[in-house]
Amino acid sequence: MHAPSPSTAVTSRQVFAIAGPAMVANLTTPLIGIVSTTAIGRLDDAALLGGVAMASVLFDCMFWLFAFLRMGTVAFTAQSLGAGETQELRAILVRGFIVAAVIGAALIALQLPLSAILLGAMGGSEGVTAAAKTYFLIRIWSAPLALANYVVLGWLIGQARATLALSTQIAINVVNMAATVLLVLVFDRGIAGAAIAAVIAETAGLVLGIFIARHLTGDKLDVPPGTLFARDKLMRMLAVNRDIMIRTAALITAFLFFTAQGARAGDVTLAANALLNNFLLVSAFFLDGLANAAEQLCGRAYGARDRYAFAGAVRLVVVWGFAFALAVMVVFFLFGPALIDIMTASTEVRQAARAFLLFVILSPLLAVFAFAYDGVYIGATWARDMRNLMVLSLLIFLAAWFLLRPLGNAGLWTALLVHYAARGGLEALRYPALFRASFATGPASPRP
Image 1: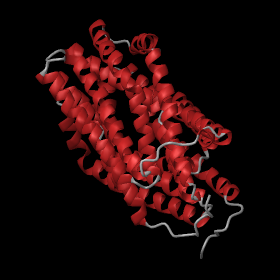
Image 2 (image 1 turned 90 degrees about the vertical axis):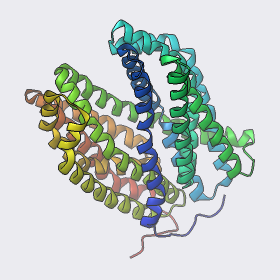
Image 3 (image 1 turned 120 degrees about the vertical axis):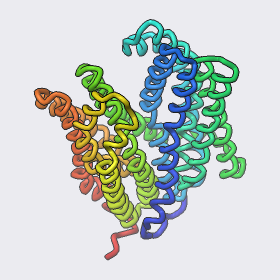
Image 4 (image 1 turned 30 degrees about the vertical axis):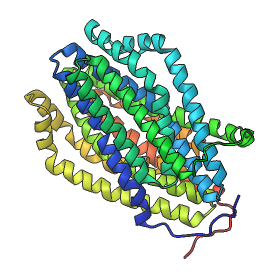
């Protein structure tokens, strides 16, 4: 292990060298769902279209639950880079692959009870459920590959190799789109073809990722067993990943609850909320890109015990977060009604969506701290505190919804904004104490 690097200033250029490619990668991801939906939609079978939509949501939530494989890998990689532990970089990648393989194998082994429970809970019609089951039982075989791709993505971002990370994401998306069109529309494989395309795409992405990793390590991905299975490293990895998983489960619970309550309000309200959710996703693409930058820059500074670089990274990510939030708010305010009209032809849905557009316009400003400090906490592996604060935020969200139920859907949207504010606000309040404790000693001190 080398000595920690000297204190250095973090620049906006460094932030956007990571955030820029991450934003582009985020913007390309929805193309998979669009192409799959379009290809299946061309078959003119509503049950198949509903099946692929239902199953895709299940996989999004299921894989999102294991996103700690990306987040934890970013943090550990960046910290090892900052501390000069070059051999540990290879060990982090291989450990991640092992965990991804174990989880993926477990999901495959449990595919029948999983599909029965999850599809049963969705409550679709017989035709939709049958189509979704076909898709589920094929795509589940991509689980080890998809989770391993999370590891590769985190490993590359952790080393500030954001352009290479973007390349792997684009490769997965392009292969998925091409394979979907070929298998569904040319070879007429139906919903099974869309699922097979996802497996092929994840396979191609992992092959490319391993090729890149071998190139970066000089064809040296082998790690001595003593290093790979070092007890202190394994226990820390498992503890951090456990806490990030619980945090993610709490976040998923909040959004699923929001969707379920919207569904109970009727078809028009459900459709309006689903339409407005696309606005939330757009703002999330930009803010999550900055969170990626926070994960790497804060993780690297934390590993080097450079409190000045750490504080500088936090400050820049928050400032740029507010800048992007304001820009997105202006776009939503100016073009929101027109975008609503483009996304639906239903007069009722248009009116309902416009009635709640104000909540969407305000959401980016309230989400800035939530995204920025999530990235900071992950980079510093303050996972236990992040877990506790996210669970508390979920409870605040549920309490807000309960108190605001008389307001109907407006109360539900207000509760969601309260959740955003609670997530970021609690982490911002806890940050100074964690910063002081983490950098109580170290060679680098803040500069004037």
